[in-house]
Image (cartoon, rainbow, N blue to C red; front, side, top):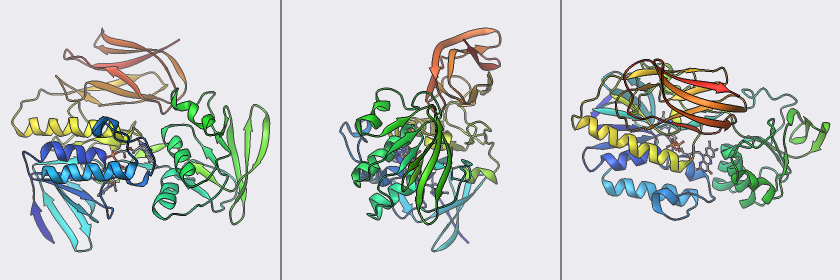
Amino acid sequence: MNRTATDILIVGAGPAGLAAATELAPHFRVLVLERERHPGGIPRHCGHYPFGIREFHRLMKGPDYARALVERALKAGVEIRTGIDVIALHPGPEISATSDEGVVRITAKRVLLATGVRESSRAQRLLGGTKPGGVLPTGALQGMVYIEGRRPFHRPVILGTELVSLSAIMTCASAGIRPLAMIEPGDQPTARWPTSLYPRLKGVDLRLSTRLVAIEGREQVEAVIIDGPKGRERIETDGVIISGKFRPEATLLANSHLIRDPGTKGPRIDNLGRCSDPAFYAAGNMLRPVETSGWCWSEGRTIGRAILADLQGEQRGPAQPVSIEGEALSWVMPQMIGGKGALDRLQLRVNRPVRGRLVLRIGDKEVVSRRIDSRPERRILLPMPALPHGPAKVVLEEK
Ligand SMILES: Cc1cc2nc3c(=O)[nH]c(=O)nc-3n(C[C@H](O)[C@H](O)[C@H](O)COP(=O)(O)OP(=O)(O)OC[C@H]3O[C@@H](n4cnc5c(N)ncnc54)[C@H](O)[C@@H]3O)c2cc1C
């Protein structure tokens, strides 16, 4: 087995990993490992706008944006190796990876995990009916349309109304596919206004308070059965795009020594982005499902700067856990806070539509609060001022 060493090792060449790498490269040797043949992460497969406003101050399509991130990283001195799959994490920090050349072990001063998200499969979504072709998650659809130039169906229905389902509509538009309907179990779209207007602008029938009961078809999808305000209906269609219900790509955590958060399913981190072993950091969508590329890029850059401060000897106080109270709260991230951190806001999600007040308490003291009117899969932020020491808890007081 080959052994090698670097200063900073980054797993995943998406917006988060590349942003962190670019921050660190002027100061340290930075090696980014990417399992795909090309770096750039998910934006490489999104041949539509809008990417790049925050990072390059202009509107770009996903592949151009991915290329620009890679060029910026290379210019800063980052080494990117593709076609190499990280398969295990070890204390040290050290990682094992495989490629066509075999297995390699790499040691580093710090490791940053930036492996993104994965989509839930049809089985994980418990969708009933037969199992014909033409049922695709958005990522697979994007691969077929943008990379292979294929059109898997003509008039599909889309399941879900969050951010990535809008990406599915854009993908369809670029291939001349005209979705018939979007199906949403809630009584409002998940994406916030004004992005939630996008389906109707594109002529897609938005079916709220509606459930997908079954998918019918033998070789290819022929129809879906839905249940909504008008009762049960059969819609003839030739495809189903499944969106939403993402989970961090955290396979690497499963057999590692790092603590995994049961809520986000990503690593447990503190407000510097440090994992339970402080030689490991994490950034981007592997921390929680699912944010935009601009958000992940910014998070990668922030955590890159925290790694820099750490290696330059900045002293950090101990972190304390943050718990959540309220059955509608799914998770909080970061899960540990202490002193002034790189991440200055707590991120949260709810598991059903909720109205009320979120309160951050340290012991009995209310430190900060805000009103919320939110839905599952929507971003919720709570400012995190410099906190006194003591048990921290976010409480949801529903109306
Ligand atoms: C289908 C889909 C469509 C989306 N469309 C949009 C959109 O239109 N606009 C938008 O803003 N956001 C979109 N998003 C959100 C998207 O996740 C973010 O835009 C952004 O890509 C997140 O950046 P990241 O660096 O955290 O992860 P990613 O971009 O996912 O990059 C992670 C990288 O890590 C690599 N990797 C994973 N595991 C390993 C391993 N073990 N070893 C080596 N490499 C590994 C992956 O191959 C990948 O390249 C979409 C998400 C999905 C799932």
